Amino acid sequence: MSEFLARHGAHILVLGGPVVLLAGLFAMLELTRPDRPRRDAAIPTRLLALTWAAAATIHVAVIAEHFEEATVLGVFFSLLSTAQYVYALAVVLRASRRLLLVGMVANTSVIVLWAYTRAVAVPFGLGPREPAGAADLAATALELCAVLLTWTVLRRPRGTGGPARPLARAQASG
Image 1 (cartoon, one colour):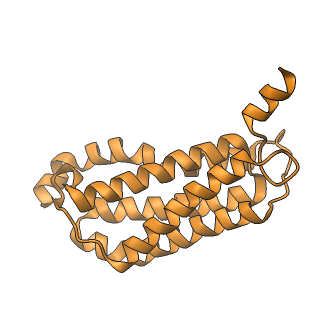
Image 2 (cartoon, rainbow, N blue to C red):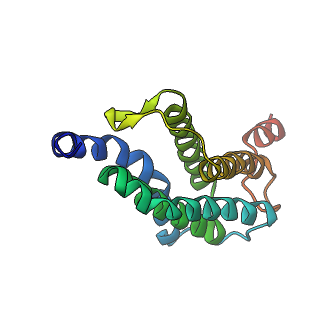
């Protein structure tokens, strides 16, 4: 395994790193954007942030276990949980349509990766498929809730804690 990581660890980080860090990066950009007005975080937005933070907490709890399996897995879970915490904070402080869309895509990617590791195998030859356990089922359920809550928040009209629906604007002007 160490020979495999020596040869391919960098490739795994190059391919997987951008997907994992996407939500965290956009969250940080949104937090530091000076022209972005602070939005009031309505209850659905706060629940969304809570689902991200709860999933991150579960991922933190399994970091050591994944480092024992492979260093790259431990690094992945460390980066994933950090990105999820930063994203949760950004959603509470400055929810924007772009931030919510990026989070929805990132969470969907994590869910797809989880499903792949349970149905097929751990990618890049890091192991056979893993059985579903209580912790990963809980984290995935939270991530699915986050995707659904994001969809709900994105569909809310302006002034109710979320970005306006694009169709509502188009119909009003048309």
